[in-house]
Length: 127
Image 1 (spheres, rainbow, N blue to C red):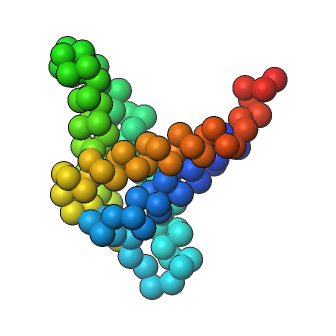
Image 2: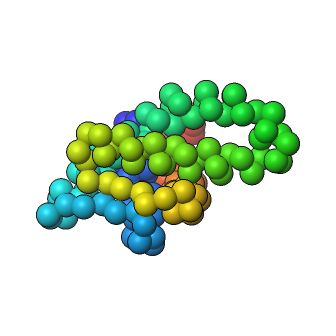
C-alpha cells in the first residue's frame, strides 16, 4: 500500500509540474491516457530516484558539501531529465524541454511531494 501511495504522490507532483510549466509536457488523447502516462512516468521516476540518484549523490558528495547542498537541486533536475529520456525511449508521451525547465520542475516536484507526504498520514509510522 505504501508503494502505491508513493506512486500516486509522484504522479500528482509530476502533474502539478506539467501544469505549471510549459516545458514539461504530458500528452494523451484522453484524460485517462494522461493519468496512465503520469502513473507510468511516476514509476520510472521512482526507479530512477531509487537506483541512480543515490549513486550520483554518493559520487558527488564532496561537491555537495562544497556547494552547501545546492548541487542536490542539480542532481534532482538531472534525474528528471533522465526520466524524460527513458520515457522517450519507451515511447511514453512525457517530455522535459531543457535543464532550466528540469531544475524548476524538480523544485516543484520536491515541494509538492513534501506537502502531500505531510498531509497524508503514513500508517506504518504511527504504529
